[in-house]
Image (cartoon, rainbow, N blue to C red; front, side, top):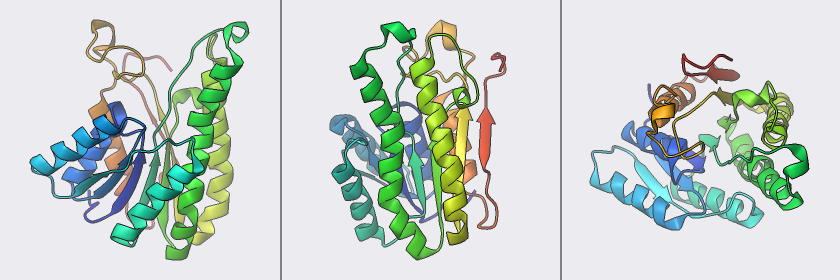
Length: 239
């Protein structure tokens, strides 16, 4: 699976799926520009990559996906250094799980800003470069709940349905420019998203490394191949 010398932007990279994905891509020779709000955790990731047997690079640029100026700065830094952007992975996101009458307006606005607006802002910032290149790949890490709903999930599932609609329209807009769009729909992952990683209750869930390997597979397909949708679950989860 060849990603040698590809320039990859990855949001939500300070921990969990994002961190594991950044490290695996760099180990396979990619230059990965990682962003998240936690500057200390990003720097630790960058340092770990320089100290290990990593063929590519990890470059940390702290930023908030809800900030247009931050996302423009991340994209500019990546392009200035490598003169190309091959892949954009929208991974930043979090969940709030409450009944509708318990959700505050502040919780609604904050989650939608990260999960939906964040995907829009990073994608929008990168699109002019991808179009000018005539190639590129935009990946959105959504969730299987972009396809279903459940009690207590109104806010989170609404954000994932919004990502699904965004991807659908985007896919039609950018395919004439040679740009791929892939939606990743995962089930339960043993990460900080749900609880403390390694908890006994989640020992049979997907691991961050499972998700990272899936990302590597998706972004290393030949130029003429696009995986539009990728659904992945732990075997014990009944979808």
